[in-house]
Image (tube, rainbow, N blue to C red; front, side):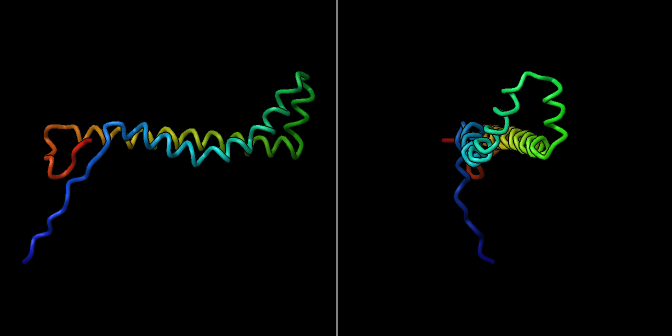
Length: 103
């Protein structure tokens, strides 16, 4: 039976930061879309107007935008964590350089 030879996985020591920046770039357009709604809400300092705003259709849209931003922030955190974990594994002395290494 033939054996499969595979090149080692080369992982950047900064994989967490690189993955974070890549994900941030993907999410940038969604965040930019939420900014006008946030600015409109923050422009009003009247508490009753803010309550009325949230009860209306625009307030619902704002809550949806905030939920999207929170989801994006969680995704960025998880992406960074995964990249950092990959780099940690590749740097570990117990992992053979034939399997994973850093550059």
